[in-house]
Amino acid sequence: MKTLQFRQAIAEAMSEEMRKDDSIYLMGEEVAEYNGAYKASKGMLDEFGPERVIDTPISELGFAGIGVGSAMNGNRPIIEFMTFNFALVGIDQIINNAAKIRQMSGGQFNCPIVFRGPTASAGQLAATHSQAFESWYANCPGLKVVVPSNPNDAKGLLKAAIRDDDPVIFMESEQMYGDKGEVVEGEFTIPLGVAEIKREGTDVTIVSFGKIIKEAYKAAEILEKEGISCEIIDLRTVKPMDQKTILDSVKKTNRLVVLEEAWPFGNVATEITYLVQSKIFDYLDAPIVKINTADTPAPYSPVLLEEWLPNHEDVVKAVKKVLYK
Image (cartoon, rainbow, N blue to C red; front, side, top):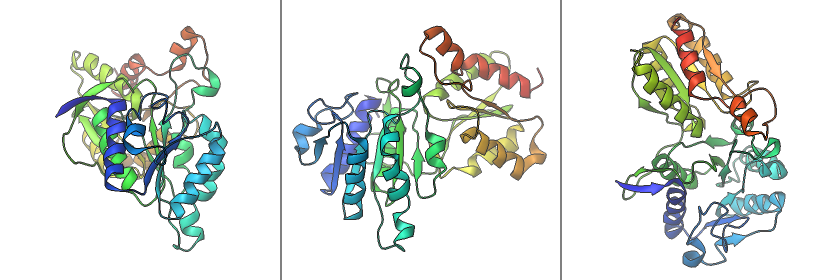
């Protein structure tokens, strides 16, 4: 194992795959000369040159469309959005072309493309730069949605996403790029659609993903001191969702809390809640609790932002609620 920052794990994944396959290229704003807005492509221009690490104008619709077209013609593009908030400008290409072309062409075209960049909040970036879009993209058939929470998962999942023959939405976080963690040395991938139990427990299942899962870890440490054992599942891939890992865990613990950094209406937590109550209702010893942001746009004020975001105290309260404590 070696220790890497999240941004370094992303760069390693892309570089390793690009060395093996000349059809892979990286395109986006500031990915080349500036080494990436968050330095997640540092050194790649020097190694691969301007034909494969391509700076673009501020035109997400344009370069998303170029990526989709080139993927349909035999390339494997990695399209970086400086933030998925900006992907809204290019969402027509993602939803109406990348996601649908295999079906609309009767299988004559596929679209092996990765759209990657940060999602959700990242401090005082205010309402239009702090939105989580995982559930939006997961709602669209034809797209796979990946949200890693640590450097090792980021590298293994990104390599798998690049090799996938379907479009993948790969969502990171500005607040995780500096996170350090142990990463497997040598060649490895992590299959899409497979969750991981990050912490085993017996009293309650907590399901989460992305950077917000850190709050679940903090809560589990606090609750352990009170004799409460939490099992924490990191989804890693939102779609396709690993239903079996969730259901097997809840069958064991009989209680479920879902933690997600997203608005409360119609999100990933809602889907998990429906899954569990529809498949294994009789195993539940308490109503499911889901924890989300407040149902408002993200505030700019740090005081209000702290109230808006879920935190470990919310998780502790939720766990005690399902345990009737």
